[in-house]
Image (cartoon, rainbow, N blue to C red):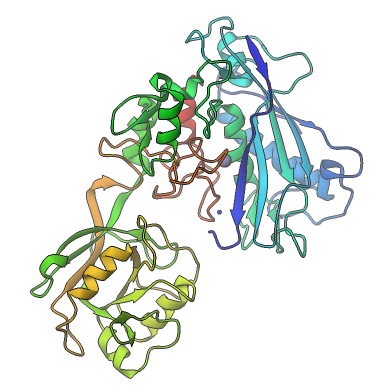
Length: 478
Ligand SMILES: [Zn+2]
């Protein structure tokens, strides 16, 4: 049975986030061919002259784009095994964008198949490229590519499409402020190879009542029931559960301990800590040093800019605040200015670490921004945690609070995993159509290729010990 449709999954990048078919077939590889679907003069055929960059020898914009596609395709080709050549129908076309955000590209399976020759599970959708591998013969409709990929031809253009350097077309990851196209391609190709469910993440409905191979491994980590055994309504609820869905595939789970680092945490103690003593979940910062096995420990001292309220540290600290945080860990409020501004200001005053208390309810999430001059660690805690901590600081002197904070790690918990050490999936409490469920959590450390946004610290690796993308594809049959 076949169902034709493009199952593309868009990849967005926010301005503030930091998101030649030469391969030869053999038993240890797969051949991936790029099928240029652009019209003459545009996209892959754009004749604009360019200078070779970062190992990409192309001399026109179109040629460089095509060579970057083939570079990424060759990385996947060297990783996967299949006797059946994989065809990616690709184009650069205008996609939706604004001043602050843009769809970088989208890709997915062009066709899905069930009950083909040698199908491991009956009554189950497989993406066309995987079905062909498993069948040992090309199952796709003649003339149809296995994967469809569209990329944004306008990215970086002033004034309306995330103005800036746009895509970096080199192969050496030296993207600077630009967006590394090869990284984005590796991500999008993974969707097309099967890193996606075909079940609707907004309605919970299966296509023609048939589950996807994905749905056998996507498990509710509170009830231990997989998506394939749930009703539509149960799938909808789990898709917006926060951290309620995990990947329960044996190959991914075996690789998790060698790929993911321990979770960061804030530990609070000391003679004045009272009810605020204990361990706190935190969000990590993309700037400053990562938290490590040796914690950074000091007196927790608030920045105060108005009575009975936590200050924001958006400007250089005055003398009293500077005295308070010097040699100590500064507690500041989120708001008004970028996180890196706060870190720069408390660091300049002599603080050895920073705790940012949220200014709105919610789970602790990360802090974006980049500034190589920041050398102190920072974490973000919830608004409730911030209130509790500030309450414990009321009897402080000008230089001491009697509340001791430690910024460190929890060796018992890996970042982005559930209590059974399985990686969490991306299930924000407000559904993000096409992104929810078909990506890994944003809480993984180090950042993973298949998170919903592209982070600047990604490599071109798709395998352990750096990345968990290929293990998931192996779980579904690659
Ligand atoms: Zn994606």
